[in-house]
Image (cartoon, rainbow, N blue to C red; front, side, top):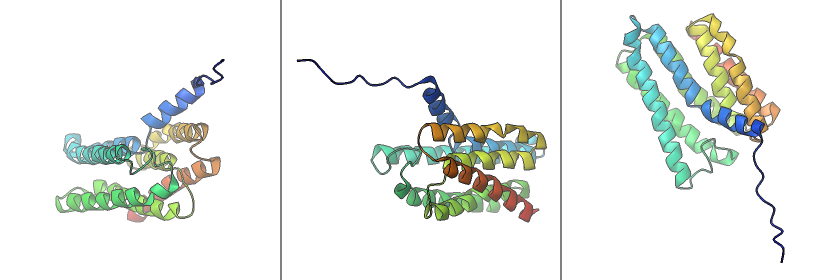
Length: 203
């Protein structure tokens, strides 16, 4: 009897590139990198800002560890929270944790140039949870666009040349079938728009 089972298809080069792009530029990566850059730039001298940058990095690592534990235990399907119904609880918890970290930094005497951008994490998380009620906005492009906007406004305008990063992330998420173009655009506009609004309001 002939085995009619079809062999598993090999991912194309474009699919592999999309997968690696989405993984390497996932939500914790770019915001933590941008936060460290802002902290370094805000510190006088720069090494003083490493303390606050290290805090952001540690918090990002803890968030990833908790998400990985949740996936392993079956709480969520994957680290990207692909299923819209799974998003509200972990995102709300992450926003609450970010708010606690921000308050600790405030009490510890972090400079204003660090506190203002730091407020983007809890504020952005809360807004994203609200948006999730109405659709599956791309968290990847939201984080990428917000990070580029933060770097351009708080470190050096030349960082605007990093704009292809959120574009690449958006392409990857569409290529992988995780989002529609509208969801990717919504995420990018939300991330960049919220970042610009918060920084302008705070002066």
